[in-house]
Length: 193
Image (tube, rainbow, N blue to C red; front, side, top):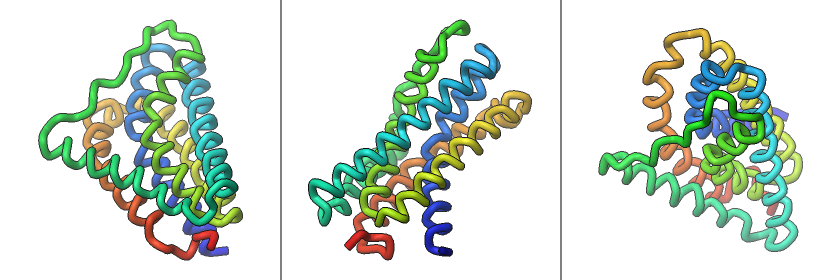
């Protein structure tokens, strides 16, 4: 039981740390568009990303069950590219902008576009795990999405969240992706083998 809780906590942390850019966008959009549409778009995007990661994990397990661990190369590679970009000073492009009257669908699409790093970490993490751990991982990711929503709602009222804090924390994402990739590539205690 404790190992399931630890796995859920690792999925929670991976979800949070790869969604810091979404948190900054969530806070900014709530101040411009209001909380109702923004939160709905954010939560719909998170549900879609988590569901897509789970579906990929289930599909990989059915097609090539013993090769799922090699999916760890994806977050490892993306993390290394992110670290190289940080050292070169060439950060990723500026986040897409949404008008103040954007409907929920447009807001959801923005958050999906910002969540590809989350998908790249969560899908291999779930694919390389036994079914009971997948459930724990999905629950951890859902809890993280709800926690980010709550933090975003509070942050829209707080000047500390609207500053550079989220941008500074965003620099941790490549390292989280590297750690997740190494974890997935290793023959860990959550492997389905």
